[in-house]
Length: 218
Image (cartoon, rainbow, N blue to C red; front, side, top):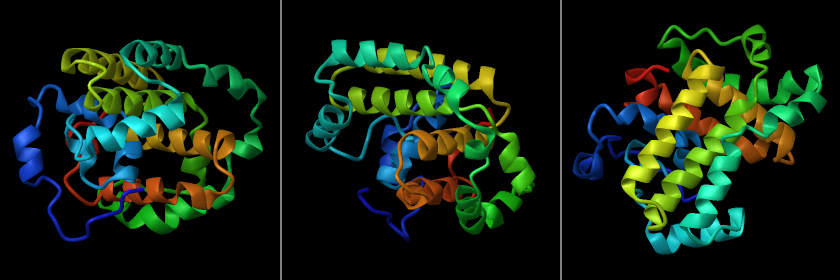
């Protein structure tokens, strides 16, 4: 959304200034795909590189939330995973979307293979759980709401910890989690696979550079 910087290191001065204690960094994989798709290198810290003036309108327009109370109601609803009820009406054919598979393969396969992740249509088709659609969006809301001043750091980290626990209950690794999110996005939200390209590019970068999916497995 806000563009990718091509040459600067991922763990730059901003990261060094705002990095969380090591025990909290694994929780920043929650919401990371959406945040990284919006602004490169922004997923590595709870503090965003976007200003509150940039973030607040995004939350208001996209989520119709305006304060901490609204945020908590929304996040706690998403943590009940309403998508699991929707999934009962989603077909196997929708979960095996070939266009999405091909986009991910074309953009990510080389970087996946560097970490012994051998991506195939059978692997892609095997990811059927869409819980990440709700978990990842809740992570974005929590992190942006913290930066808007609507949640304290303690509140935000507690929510991220709970969301991380949900992710572990539904997935065995981050790739399956992010595939679950992308499948949910294509089926429920996007008009075409092209609408998800920024997030597919972000997924590829996670396995190329010093992001947390490799350093902190699920």
